[in-house]
Length: 132
Image (cartoon, rainbow, N blue to C red; front, side, top):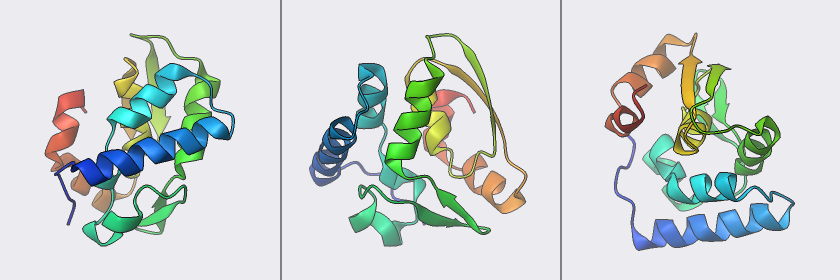
């Protein structure tokens, strides 16, 4: 089950995470702002609620993982995307990377081959905001 409430505690943990990835060399403010805006715990099972803002990958099912936040930030920074650009993502997984890019104003097209992950994301109301 996914959590869909973004508490002050989650927001504080997310702020600490963003500060830590900034300290590791992520300098693009748009990436940092997007990661600060996107509640990572929404993309994980509620069992990971207390650990969602650790800079680690976690299992999401079907032998897949949600990427480590630093990896998401690094990839997003390397892309040097601009608002309204189109990006094709192969392997939606939890959809966290796609939502970070969408939060940066990018039009994201994403494909997932694992049916269970696809179905889990399809019924995730939070993603409707980004028109996935």
